[in-house]
Structure formats: C-alpha cells, structure tokens
Image (cartoon, rainbow, N blue to C red; front, side, top):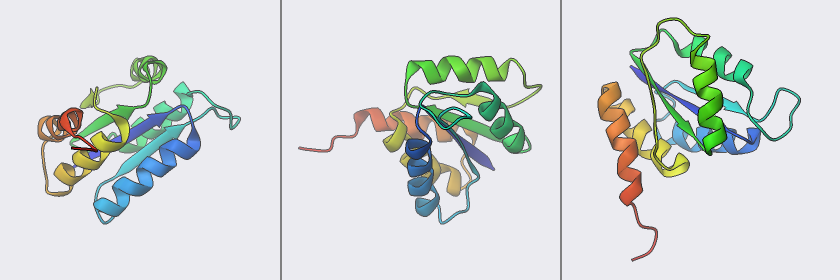
Length: 128
C-alpha cells in the first residue's frame, strides 16, 4: 500500500488536510503529518519529517505533498537522513492533490499511479 505524508508550515493546516484525506479513504490509507515547528510555531521541522518518514517506511511507497517551497527543502534534508525509501515529492496542489492521491491509494494504486492522480489536481477548476 502507498501512504501519504503531508508537510505544511502550520500544524493545523497539515492536520486539516490529513482529516479530509482520511475521511475520503475511510481511514484505509496511512497518512503522516509534519506541520509546524516542534515548538508549535509556523515553519517546518526536519526532525518531524524524518519521524513520519520512518513510520511510513514499511509501505510500498510514500507520496509527499507540501504546501510551500520551504517545505520541499525540509523534506529533501530529511530524506538525506533516511535510508532506503520508495517516495515521490509531489508538485500537486496540497489539498486537491491529497484528495485525488488518497482516492487512488485507497484502491491499491502504485506510487506512480498515486503521484499521477495527485498531479491531476492542477487541472481541477473550482468554478466554471
């Protein structure tokens, strides 16, 4: 099974995205969150990201979704500390990407399929 890791500069934002994704998948997809700093402020924590990646490491793959470029830099730093891990860092919009990715993951999609589903969020329109 493929899991998701949500990395955001706000713990509330990361938890909110996780909540939506978990509800969509009926809790069937493992979803990690790393939001905010360890002290509870805004920012990202490489240590939190490492911890969540280690927790998800036994899966067939992890799709990592981020809110801002700084989160991607923190993810890359965390990945340098991790051994072997099958992952992809997505360039999809955070909320919509997580929504589409978790649907694909919940039906057994591969990491490549889950990542492709998340990227389809770029073409989603909220208004006609």
